Image 1 (cartoon, rainbow, N blue to C red):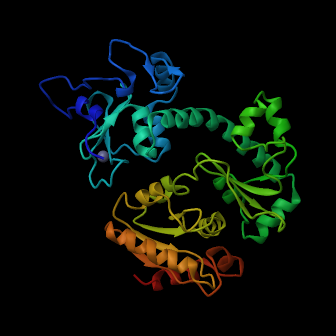
Image 2: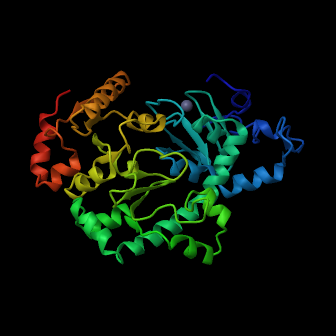
Image 3: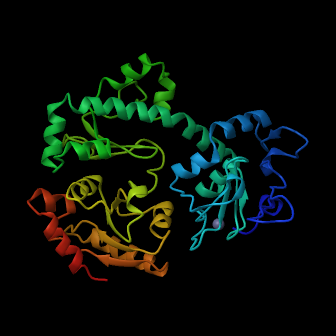
Length: 370
Ligand SMILES: [Zn+2]
């Protein structure tokens, strides 16, 4: 934390000013001086030239990267700049300034600012070389994962076992399948399809889509595209039920839609999310497990709201324990919480699959205790 050298050199003046608002140094601190010296990573034989970094920054506009990470511009300023809540600290009123023309940001709250690389460093809490690697990966993986999601989406309708499984888990509407972009990985066909499209085998391996020995990584799995990952649920009892591609699971599921509601329902799994959304609860989001990562926690705290914690009522009580711990942490941040009690042994998915309806679930929400 604290003010960095970059932040001190970055000066952005909001609104009217006698001087034209400017960033005094539009370059990343790691780029060396503005005399155009190339950046060389310390103790790293590979040298990253200014040109390489400029190219990367051009390929990943800051505004697009911010929005892909759930940042929302709250109000426009002059010269095309925007103000919004700071994604780097718990911000109550917008103090995060973005200049899409210069591809720079500055936060009046925490005093930090810079370019997209600096943002990636701060946001993911990594050092410069890791931030570069993450950005490159993000730039490369994005189109590939879109391609994979489309392919698996087509496969879903060709495989009866996938449709049957979805039906058993309460996924019954085409609208829901389209909303969640649910697909099916039968196995044994993704690699061939992608290499035919020109993707290299090493790239597919690196993304985790293909195993070391060259097989599709996901076999007989229902697939849900996430913002930069792919969750696969096995339809076969003989395989581990849950799988993700290497890398972070990302933020809260479909947060952009849920975050506008003053009351949000938080569930553990995507099949819980699915049945609630289908029943008309569009203020639902999912943390993909009971342990929230730092980003997911920040998202829940980004505005005043009430969070209905609806974790599994498993016999060991681990879901309820996790909910209580989370509830306490949220309350410390000023977020109102309610603990929703499902019938013993149920999760939201089984509640609906076993005949529960929207009205009954609504009663559970109303009965939820603080
Ligand atoms: Zn800030």
